[in-house]
Image (cartoon, rainbow, N blue to C red; front, top):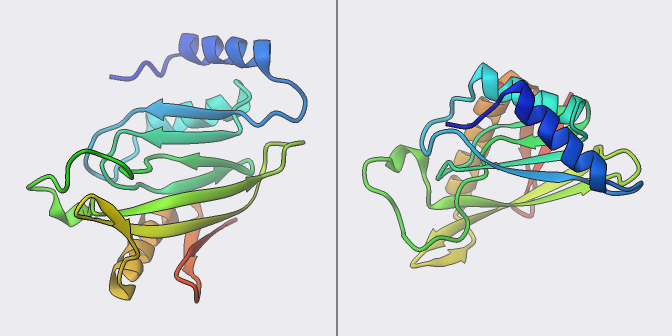
Amino acid sequence: MADLSDQTVLRIKNEVAAIKQPGDVVLFSLHWGGNWGYNISPDERRFAHRLIDEAGIDVLYGHSSHHFKGLEVYHEKLIMYGCGDFINDYEGIKGYEQYRDDLTLMYFPVINPASGQLVEMTMVPMQIKRFQTVSPAPHDRQWLVDVLNREGHKFGTQVLLEKDGSLTPQWR
């Protein structure tokens, strides 16, 4: 279980403060949460917010889940609660097909280096087939949009499917 305590936030804050220079963008990679399911606990969300508010994190890259989870833009900073698998040494885990772990995303955020704020972002859907990434079919892209919009609703985010097949997140 992840240590989401005050002491952990303070330790991360001190480590970031010791090395962060003006113009640096701090991306924090965090292996947390369950492998399956879309739930993001209140403790996880509170911890993510504290990393931004108190520890100087600009982008939180969450991973552990074998599928993507919702996105949040908090104080104009990007939180990716679960990015799923992009490169792995297996193809499909039986019993979890409803999560479509064969569908994945490439994330291309544009961050303002002066403020660490998310300016814009593009996500490129991919599908893993025979241990290779390929472009997914239109109905698979739409499935991604539908799930990202369902999961992002509670965070005030949605994604738009562009004509080129990429996804553009919107936030309020």
